[in-house]
Length: 127
Image (cartoon, rainbow, N blue to C red; front, side, top):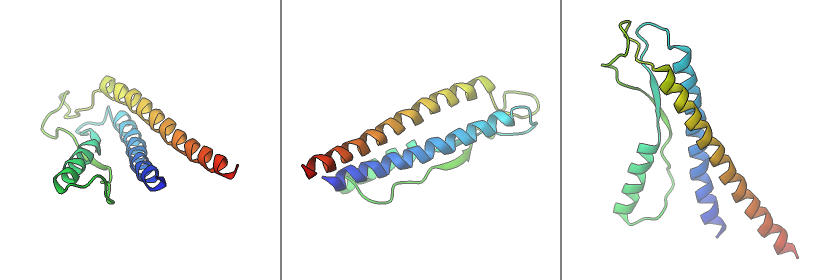
């Protein structure tokens, strides 16, 4: 039982790492919104995670070690929204920042709830 709870916690921890990294990348994009030739960056994690889940299903596994790491990638290197070659849309970045903040807070609540459950089980086991 505890192993199952902790394996889910590992996944949530990786998702928190990805959300934290995404926040930094979005802030970097916003800071470079006026830099000529700058190409926006994004964090790839969820698409890797989906591929990871599909691979586990093919192998008939429910869970395994080796959760993919979040990585930074350059987005749309061929396109730009302005004449100076910059492709950062400040409004889209701000919306992404808000969405990412909500996701991060939700993940924090989830992991906090998990630890609260573990604490309750330990405390009730002592009685």
